[in-house]
Image (cartoon, rainbow, N blue to C red; front, side, top):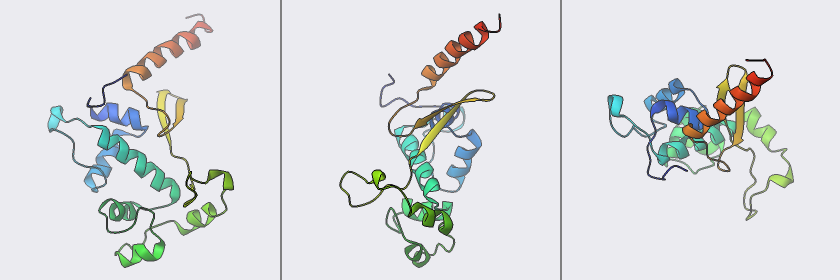
Amino acid sequence: MRHMLERWTLSELATLAGVSTETIKSFKKQGLLPPSLGNGRGANYGREHVERLKKIGGYRQLGYTLGAMRAIFENRVDHLPTPAELREAGVERGADFEKMARSETRSPLMADPNNTRTSVAEAWGRVKLFPGLELHYELGRYEVYPQAVEELREALRAILCAGMGE
């Protein structure tokens, strides 16, 4: 298991979060992710970057736009703002209203433990193992480490290639 203070490269962070390196660069450019720790080849990312990517994934599934997320992360609005609150904060297109309306018809089994809010989505990460094969996992429940992914790839390669006589 990796030490909590360990840092990751851009490609490791992308693998860990199940997004592309270009997506991470775009989020940084748009102010959704904090700057990397270090510059150039020495740039690396810590736990705060992983947590922010998890939040972004959750907000995307809820239907919030990148502008809405920026307002949330800048503390200009509550962590689950209404469309009216977003407009008051200057975010005109803050959410996919159809997606949010669909989320209102969610199962009562998805209520949070203290019953003050209802969870409308689960955030999932993905790791591309091979072309056409991905690992999907629930963010927050599992942590995916680049070294473990490489070990999984090797094991799967052995399993998948054994049937092909390679």
